Structure formats: C-alpha cells, structure tokens
Length: 227
Image 1 (cartoon, one colour):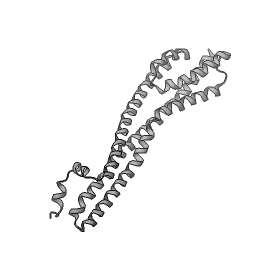
Image 2 (cartoon, rainbow, N blue to C red):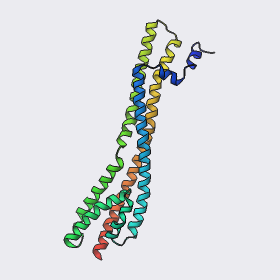
Image 3 (tube, one colour):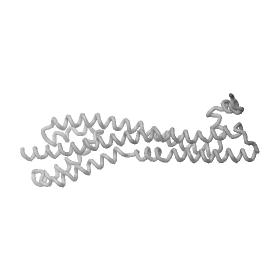
Image 4 (cartoon, rainbow, N blue to C red):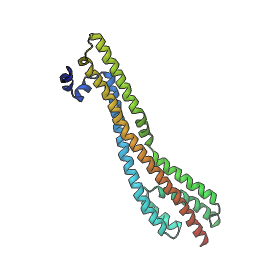
C-alpha cells in the first residue's frame, strides 16, 4: 500500500530539505560542518605526525644504539627532529653535560631522571596538541544535532497547528528536515571519536617508548662513567 504522502515526500531531496530549512536549522548545520571540517583537518595532520614520529623514532633509536657515547648521539640527533625520542635525549643530554662539566661524571642520577621525565612530558604535550578538539567534537556534536532536531520538530508541529491539518503529508518534510541535524551531528562526532581513541593509543605507545628510552639513556651514561 502506498502512503498518501509518500510521493510528495520522496520528491524532496536532502539538499532541498536543507535549502528550505529554518535559519536556526541552517545555523546548526553550518556549525556542525565547520566542526567536522576542522576535525578532519586535525585527523589528517595528527595521522601524518604520528606516522613521522614512529619512523623517526626507529631511525633515531638505531643511531643511538650504535653510538659509543652521548656526544656522538648529540651530533646525529639533529637529523631526527621529528622523533620524540630525540626531544627526550636533548633534555637528558643537557643535564648530563652540565654534570660532566662540574665533576667529569654524572653524579646526580635523580636529577637526570627528573630531567628525562620533563622531556617526556614536553613531548607528550606536543603529541597531544589539538586532540582536545577531537574529544570536544565527539562529545558535543550529537547534542548540537539533537538541539537542531528538537527545534525543527517544534517548528514543524507549530506549523501543523497553525495550518489546522493533521496529515502526515504536512508534517513529514519538516520532521525529515529536523532529523538531518541529528544525522549531521553523528557524522561529525563518529570520525572524531574514532580518531581520538586511535590517537590516544598512539600517544600511550609513544609514551612507553620514551620511558624505555630513558632507561637506555641512563645505561649509556653509566657506561660512559665507567670508561
């Protein structure tokens, strides 16, 4: 059985519904579009950053393990500026060099460990930059879309009451227009949520690599002292 309003409803495309939407609905859709575009920009930028960080980490770690002392690593570190491990090394190297200058050896291991932790914190801050926007988009976008949907449904029923008509033919296009806002909110939120979780895993993985590297750095300074 064909519903009496189906023909008229199917003739309206999504773009026609958006074009005929109220100012508030268009504003909600515009906000969601801007949020989604910013999220995708951040997603591609962070994906490239994490990929480069992993590759640079591997190359730097190979150079570090082949180097006989800290000075040799420092000379090669400039080639690996994208590696978080190189940033941690810089912090540790500066502290170790200061202690070597004073006594010719690393005499304060606790200070060196704290400096390495500061380097790790600095690199984590850099890696997590702009990720808060993804979390915000994932959390807020569905509610913004729902807000637009509720306003659209209210507007549709107000128009239905003013027209004095109780047919679905009169209210269906308005409700469909309102539901587009919910769909847009989910379309903005889902990729942002997936990317935030994926990048969070990458940050934890790189954090573990930096913790392990700090131990290797301390071992190298101890070997240097023994020599």
